[in-house]
Amino acid sequence: MPAAKTIKVIGRRTINAVWRIGLATRFFFLTLVYSGSSFRRFHLIVKELFSTGVMSLIIIIVAGLFVGMVLGLQGYETLKRYGSESALGSMVALSLVRELGPVVAALLFASRAGSAMTAEIGLMKATEQISAMEMMAVNPIARIVAPRFWAGVISMPLLAALFSAVGVFGGYFVGVVQIGVDEGSFWSQMQAAVDFRDDILNGVIKSFAFGTVVTVIALFEGYDAPPTAEGVSGATTRTVVTSSLAILMLDFVLTAIMFRGN
Amino acid sequence: MSLSALVEIRDLNFSYDKRPVLEGINMAFPKGKLIAIMGLSGCGKTTLLRHIGGALKPTRGYVKVDGQVIHELDQDGLYAMRRKMGMLFQFGALFTDMSVYDNVAFQMREHTDLPEEIIHDLVLMKLHAVGLRGTHNLMPSELSGGMARRVALARAVALDPMLIMYDEPFAGLDPISLTVVGDLIRRLNDALGAASIVVTHDVQESMKIVDYVYFMANGVIVAEGTPDEIRASDRDFVHQFVHGEMDGPVPFHYPGGDYRQDLNL
Image (cartoon, rainbow over all chains, first blue to last red):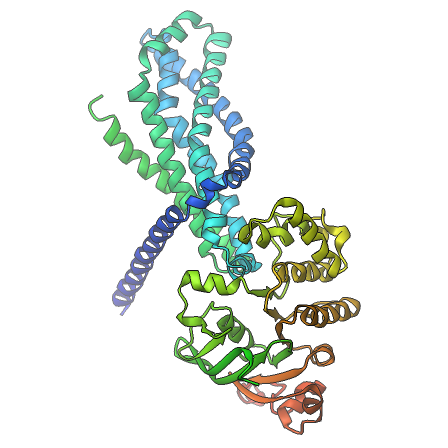
């Protein structure tokens, strides 16, 4: 009975998915519960901020620059049709601050820092480093997971802000320096159109939410990975795929809540 | 022996997915003694070690360490107990993002309020005891397998534990490292007055250093005694294992169908 078999497979996969969501939620709450020691020993978070945040700077800056430049080109071509080239600055800035900055930076963060976190923790598990820590009476969630979680949560909004800032300069370079849009209108329109609370703060909230989701997924996948080469490789792939989908879905939900009717 | 035993195991049973892994295990590990648990891969040796460390809970029976039943301890109690234990993992399990020095200092920093100057001296003393004081600035990736095992040994005894567990400490070592690690295990146990449990298949090396041996097969103890008693044993399984014979109670061939039929003859 192929139909019964299909239903059985779907049912098993659904149960597995729900089970994993439950485990990940429990893992998230345990991370929050055991975060106290990370803040008492802030140097642990600082160390992780370097590997997750600072080491992601190059990819964020380069990607931000090119996204801004493309926005400058595409925006100019579109706005020119309506004679609104002077609005290029506000278009570039709003696109970046509201949407592209948080989303693209989070996607890059998931690919670069998230996959690295998963692989690192998965390998620590495969080489019994996590078991060794437990045998030394040190809680691995407090010592390994929590500092990485907070480093991810702190660095994501900063990286998104940097992405948007560099992107604005990319748009400026193409629009003003290369094409010749008026510099004064580029900056003044941007200043007039971008609202601190509605645009910048909402963008920061988005990137904070993305940072939380990506980091939890990356850490959970690493911690839950089967301790084999295949297991770690599969977990790393799942981190990038699941994080990317979660970012896009969450972006829709947050955008619907934040910008409805604006 | 059991009255003064630091570790006492009584009627220990453990099943995994209804498959029995340990059945009716009774053992005692007194202070000052170095005891080996030997047996084939998959016979339950490491599972037994994990019960002593509190990583698994028995389905029946108990493991008592220093008078306390391990599986009845809450997390704080278990962590307090683990501070009195040291464990050497099969391939060392050194923290790869920390230097040799930081690996050995790890527990001192986590569990004590000692000033860094004292930790510095203690770490160098522990590394000196395993002959690797000069490696304190190196990363684990810069060490050979034998050196990594010795650093892990220094880390395992960092807080002078009363119980030290070794999971396959001789696996994959060259003959010189093998002798060095074996000698260190004996000397460290004697110096600390601890109880040491060595899970191993390395008959020749472990027989040189241990005081007592438990032989396990299929989750039960099949023989026990001093190294001399084990060497002289006429039990088929023990004889095959100790002398490394290809065939015996443990068959060379994995059970399969008819050979002729498999070859289509």
